[in-house]
Image (cartoon, rainbow, N blue to C red; front, side, top):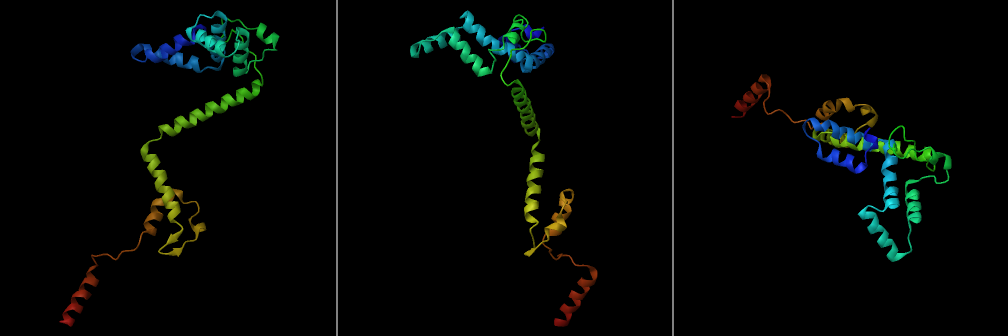
Length: 208
């Protein structure tokens, strides 16, 4: 189960195995890292680093804290639990966790404060990411089309210097091209028809 693997390894797989047949595993690693259940394991890894003191970054953090104030593992764990919103008073919830399987469906969940509110925030964040991705995937032609339509909506206020009744143009987004043609200034054709051409020739002869 990928959920039992450390996040550092999954991040390495996600970053380095994106070619050929191994890309399948990179995508699986992405799914696990984004999973809400695996989030518990990612957070707990910070606590493990403090408890075991085997990580260089955590040892450096401890030395920095000691230079400013007396620090110990308990105070640092409390700081982490507050950061992630853990419910330290839920003894029953903590007793149900299997830390070896934490990050999988069989490992249990870390109890949290205001869990329902947090889940709503997570769903909102996921939705915001989808909207951002959707906007980024829109092609340049779509952007230009929207800009052209916006300019058209602004230009509907006047026609040859006269106010145009906006209610007459309500619901016309699907016909903007037709309206654009109607609002173009009328220019007399430099190539008149046969009848007008004949009249011009006759008038010219009379004037001579």
